[in-house]
Length: 602
Image (cartoon, rainbow, N blue to C red; front, side):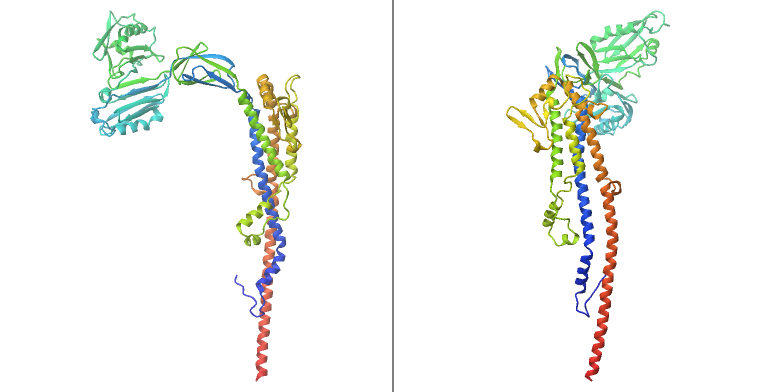
């Protein structure tokens, strides 16, 4: 609203009204200052709450027995097997021998046809028609549509798009001009199985090298004691073709599956082909030359059918590789794992190489680790003690009150900052809530832990932790430290070496009462209580004002300020109306005086 005053009277109306209102606004300024003090006090409480929460979290960790059972582990051959120990590992000497490392399944193509480069097409690699590449891994199987016009890079991308479903990942190396197919996991359950539909010869396209395994049985579940075919007469011949080689095996009505497996292994193993009956009742062939197909036949076809050796199972369109388990001997006991990282009896092992002899594993109590843990905890306690004491003894600067809006406008930013640094001091000076909490914590640390049998350690002082330690000629701690505690490192380490479980009990014991609780248990419970008390008073950053006492008080002041502000606005409006009426009256009198003067002058 535009107001122009003093035109008739010549009085500085705005200045007069401003001075009048300044006196009336003194109660409002006091409310603004009081609200600001409440907000500063709230913020200081919340800052202290965060520091107390840090000690509470540390006390919770100190309550856990696992933290006192740290073990130090050594391996006589770190370059071949590394080891760490959990709290469950038994102290003493152990041994482990790595007989075989776990491996993932893998297939590697030969040198692909044509010039190296991921842009060459599958058609240039002798893929005769658009078809499907069936990719199977430990996670499952996926049929992937591939075209003769697809590039090698595109095919690799299509395979990797399904890795989450198959467990098979492909990589093309342009320098080597080869495709590497690998399982995402290791162990005997991992596999890489590739099969092309439409009769395409997978080896003529990719030229696979290395060994593979293909499961071929499965039309019926086989057992070693079952007969190959009890219904045949005389002797029939099962023929196995492996590349240019042919193997013939005699089968009669009394030939058992186990006998046939033994015959085939005796005849073919030296040429790189092995066979076994797997747990699923299928015949499983290992092939030292992944590029060489294996086919089966007999005169009648009856034996091939009974064994599930359909040529559609093993042919040039399919190839398979399987992974290996890690084979180890721990303390003389043999075991297998599908990874080179495995856990045995509280030990975490990582096998790097096979070992000819057993690796010696030494386990002992890790005194240094537990000592550092206790030292860190005491350090956090002392830090909190310092912070609380600083707040309690900080003097209020009563000459520096919160600035009113008008005062802030009249000051420079730098001066405002310096002023408020003084004004914020002593918000928690002599605070009874904090001083009471400090006293409670100090008492709990100095008291004995009840319920511990006679003759055992039962206080911090007995393990070298107290408010006044004397080590040689050095004295640590005094009354002026106001509750800080100190560590006699030699005494604490000796206690951890001689009586680790008793030291643990001093911190972790969970009794029926506070007197029988361990130190960490007490502090955790006490800090939990203190946090709730401070939260009830000052809330948290996410709290609404009406949920804590200082917030409620602030809301009350805000309401009072609104009412007073409205009254002041009405008062200011009334002053302006009164001065306006006066100006109008003076103007009218001036007009009459001017008229009278004109009349007398005629």
